Length: 335
Ligand SMILES: Cc1ncc(COP(=O)(O)O)c(C=O)c1O
Image (cartoon, rainbow, N blue to C red; front, side, top):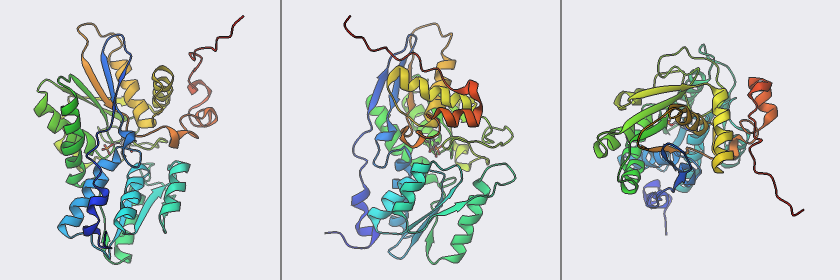
């Protein structure tokens, strides 16, 4: 029996005793592994932070039976919150923007009684400032709002420190490189701080999108949700990063298609950026094969109409951007 108080329902969302799988990928020069974070409960790595943020908020008494959760997210974090809030029995109002993937928006509209969608670009050419302003408006308007504030909530990084990093530690006796995409910085902060304790020689490579302001470039309009931000996220302060690689969005598309055609992994746009960065980084590598790990943050399904759709690629990046997928093995027929 479970009551209606979220505090009595915490066990219902405590599903982090199962590890996400790790896949070994063929490569000539490195030992390459992908941790399939899309195998989490609602399909992305954001389940880690959503679970831990909500759990800690309930335990601290910040989120109670009469609360409404309100959060700004262009995708995966909103999906995770929608799923967990339903299990906890509390309403959730996602604040999304025009860059949201159509399947993600469909899911949120099915599960949440109220969805706020903003359409005005802020002065950086993105939507983050507009979304955050709408969150503040809702906090003033509604009673008993709990705002997870994924950009600066330390529990988001702590989730990766405790859960994701612990799974990596239990899986790998040795790890030389970790490639991590950066949005709010929670994943890279939590993983880098814990895994550098475990593997003192580990090199952490952060991957960001061109047009993001996180590592100092001018913010510009971006089209693929996941990586990047028009603000420098406070959580990044704690991250232990050795190198930063900036990947243009058009190369994220190429990375997604290569990951699919070479390895059969159907992953989202941010994973495509990270995979592209790894391929480039080890292009001319000589020496003993290092062990390299990256995360598949979410699945390609939500990107079927964008990153994987030639018409969208042409409209967004031009005709030369459509990846050549002709490496597909041909069917053999008996003569
Ligand atoms: C698909 C995807 N990849 C990567 C990230 C970046 O993770 P973090 O916010 O922990 O930096 C996000 C964050 O929203 C994401 O949705």
